Length: 89
Image (tube, rainbow, N blue to C red; front, side):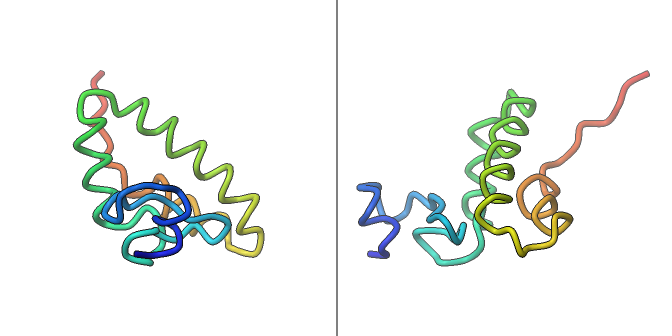
């Protein structure tokens, strides 16, 4: 079990962020990891706007913790992967 999963009391396969590094508490990759991205897409399947709000709040918190990281890379990491719905006219 990783320190993130143990410290938070969550299941080791939860794939929750460990701050202030913003790594995955389960696999150690940058959060949100591929597994968590898939789970978030499934969880927010019917409400992409809420997913964007959630990830935007994570981005804001991570920006404070990861001040030396380039802003564009954090934006790509936290919200750039979310599929966009086609615009209707």
